[in-house]
Image (tube, rainbow, N blue to C red; front, top):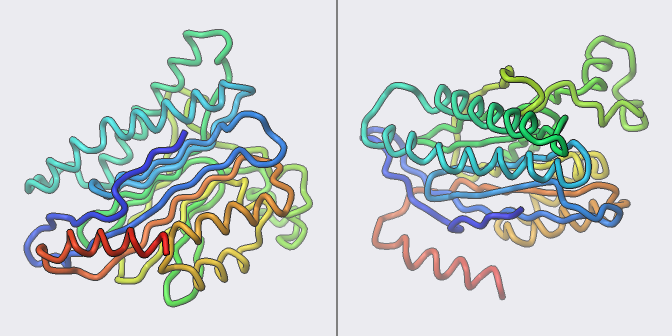
Length: 287
């Protein structure tokens, strides 16, 4: 499933808080081997939300899990965001992200328990919520969030996977990890239990930052150096950058569904210029 949000949106930030705009794009592809796309990805730029989920649990069940997780988040998060922007200080964005991810987990778990054909389904999750001059990050599983800043790509999440644990414990060398059969064995996902532990992080954003949310269909096949190069070269043309990332994963085998969401932090601009900027940016994408 693929949602499209507005390519660009301004945020009514609080006084004395730097005001940024963001633009973004999301793209998903079934790949060259599978017949069902179990990834779901969405961008709601008006609310500062980018979210990606990679479902698992067999044919159809995985896409049900990922779609249900995204539907829950996109339904519940905007209400919390409106309250926060209106001056509410509790809960904080990081706190209500954790709360609503917990609700999404429970929704997936309950659906799996109610229907036999959905038993065992689950989904990874990568969520970025941009607010003020910060971004709240939440994730579980092996979908990832990266940030390109000053030409350098940095991984902001840590995989919930057996392979990651083996590397951390010194049981396998990092350079051998790409050939391990354990790279697809996740140790955490939404829906597998009534309660979960969500990884949370908050970062300050800067003008020019580019955030990438992606499923393992990209990172299993494309080296981080190549991702960094594509994003550095194409960061002013997000649709083209997203297309290149997905195409490269398919050129390298396309063994899995591949999904990406790209969000770029723009400089603050006068309100009267926002509409014209959106039109010119959209026209620029198709030149």
